[in-house]
Length: 243
Image (cartoon, rainbow, N blue to C red; front, top):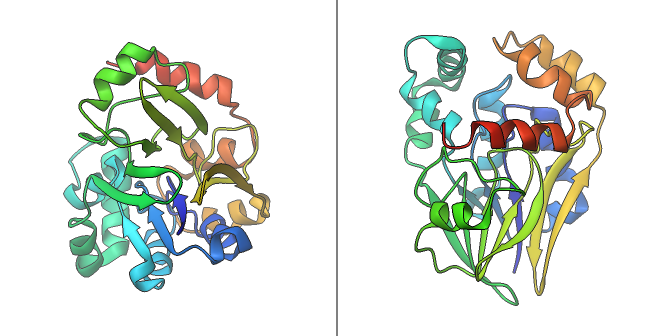
C-alpha cells in the first residue's frame, strides 16, 4: 500500500493541484489529508479536489478546520474562519465537522501508522524537530503506533521519540522551509520519504490574492516567497510551546 500524506494546505489550490498531479502522489492508494485544509483562499475548491478522489481520501481535522466549523467571534483567525465558512457553505461545513482527530492505517514495512494534525489527543499542541524528547513523549501520551505522522508547524522532520518514529509531513500550501515549494510525505513498503513538489508560486500568489482571504498577506506571501526559514519557524514555534 502507498499512502500520500498532505498536510496544511490552507486553501492553496495551486499547491494542492501540483501535488495531486505529481506522479509520486497520483498513484497513491490512500491520500491522507492531515488537517488545516479549509481556512485559506480557496477552501471549497480544495475540499472538492480531495473529495473527488472518492474512497481513496481520509480526512483528519486540524485546528483551523475546527475554527471554520465553529466560527469563533473576534480576532483575525475568527474573521478568516468565518470567511472560509461562508465559502464552504453548510453542506461542506457539515462534512468537515465529522472529521476525526486521528486516522490509523497499517502500512507494510512500517507497521501501525497514526496520522494526526498536532498530537493524537488534540489539534493544538506544538511538536517541533527540537522539542525535548520527554516533552514530546508526554504530548504523544500512551500512543502505541510504530509511526506518528503530524503537521501543524509547517516544517518537515523525521525523528525518534522513545520507541515511536515521529514525522512531520510539512505543509503543502504554506511551508516554512525557505521556499514556497509544496511539502508532503509518502509512505510505502519499507520507506517513508519527505518530498517536495515545485510549482509556480508567484502565479499562485497572483491567483490566490484575488480571492479576498483576510489573512492572505500575513499567512501566504512570505511563505510562498521563501522568506521564512525552517530554523526561524522552528524557533518561533518552540518559543510558543506550552503557552
